[in-house]
Amino acid sequence: MDKFAPKAFSFSSSSARESGSIRGSNTLKRDILKRERLSRRALKTKATGARASALSEFKEKFPAAETAFYFAAWYFLNVQFNIINKTIYNYFPFPWFVSCVHLGVGLLIMTFFWTTRLVKFEKPSPTFLKALTLPAFLHAFGHCLSNVSFATVAVSFTHTVKTLEPVFSALGVYLVSGTVYPLPVYLSLIPVIGGVALASATELSFTWLGFLTAMSSNVAFAARAIFSKKLMSEMSPLNLYNYVTIVALLFCIPFALLFEGSTVAAGISSAIALKGQKDFVMSLLSVGFYYHMYNQVAYQALGKVEPVTHAVGNVGKRIFVIGFSILAFGNKISTQTAVGSAIAIAGASAYGIIKAKYAEKKTA
Image (cartoon, rainbow, N blue to C red; front, side):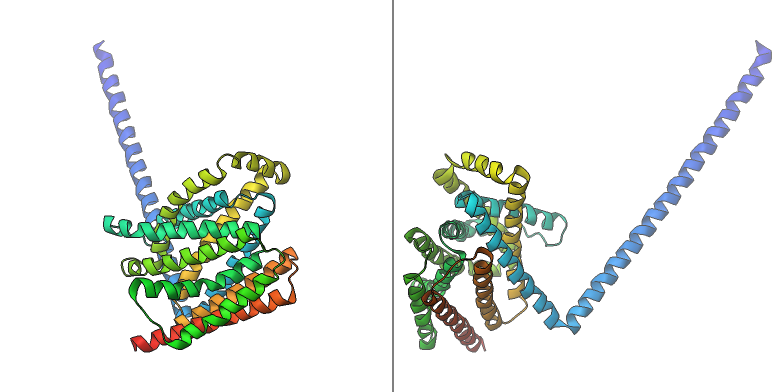
């Protein structure tokens, strides 16, 4: 047995050398791969920085192009939302449920933006969340009532009625804070009121439910703007809107269950039988996407332009929505309704311009 001992020792020594060689080779490979990963990461960071620098330089050289992009995106997304939304209601008349879908899809989008850091996450304080409760409730209530109106009457008529929102804003500001605007601001509201009354008198799709829910949404949104104004100093507008969306969804769900909970399952089955499951689900997802994105872009547009420009842009948005909805659905409107809508829109435009100029003089 002794004569075999050296061979056993020699074999063990050889194995150790080979094992050490393999470990050394693996370590070398790992080092090479690590250097390659770091190199790729550095190149990617450099490329990202170069793109960001180029984009920043473009924005500085062509600010008007950036503003035009935001307005074009705002108009496009809003028109798409209104057309798809009304198309859904033509075969699935469940506005409370669809309102929840709008906000639910928005929750998914904002989660994506936060996790990818496209939008900087801001953690709300308990005091902030408490103060957010009322504006979020008003947002939920106004959003749901708007959709009830959209489902009941023509989109063009709902938007005409919604030009009355400044009337309730002016009244609400006075009642809450005692703010009194110059006389020209109030005078500009007269054609808005007259125009809506003229349009309503001969609106072919008129129903009291559609009219009253649109009017009630004006009250809710005007109040939301008043009570959420203080919160804008505590958080960026985009994140404020995101948190309003989250809390508003919690308020919307009980309303949906109360008004449609017993019938929505049958409605979903009918819609799937008519359109197919894939098309129906995609329609709900797309309308939620357009709803959230047009609101987000509207906030971004507001940050890029003066209040006067934004006020005019908002009126222009309504003109686009009314015009495209009439073309998309072939709604017939009387001459009186068309004239009334035009007067209301002109009055809303005048109100936005005069009020914004008054605000500029006050801060100057």
